Amino acid sequence: MKEGIHPKYMAAHVTCVCGASFVTRSTVGDIKLEICSECHPFYTGRQKVIDTAGRIDRFNQRFQKSKGIQAAKQEKAEQKA
Ligand SMILES: [Zn+2]
Image (cartoon, rainbow, N blue to C red; front, side, top):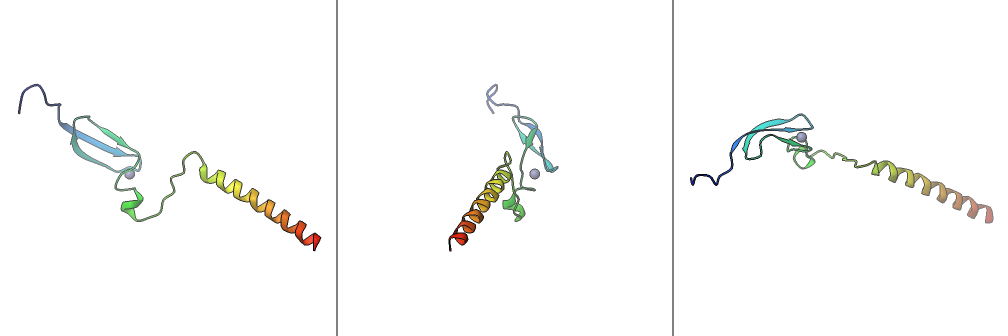
C-alpha cells in the first residue's frame, strides 16, 4: 500500500431508526440510517406506509370532500327526476 494516500479504514457501527445495528468497516466512521435491510419492505415482504408530511391524511381529506360533492350532485339529480 502506498503511504499517505489511503483514508483510515475503521470499524463502523451502523444503527437504524428501527433499532437494528451491525458492525462493518468504513472510512466515514459510525453511520445512522433511516431504513435498513431489517425494516425495508423489500426485505421484510410486508407493506409499510412511509407517510411523508401527512400526504395520506391530505388525500383522505380530499377524498372525503369529493365524496360529499358527489352525494350532493346525486341528490340534485334525484330531485330533478
Ligand atoms: Zn431498519
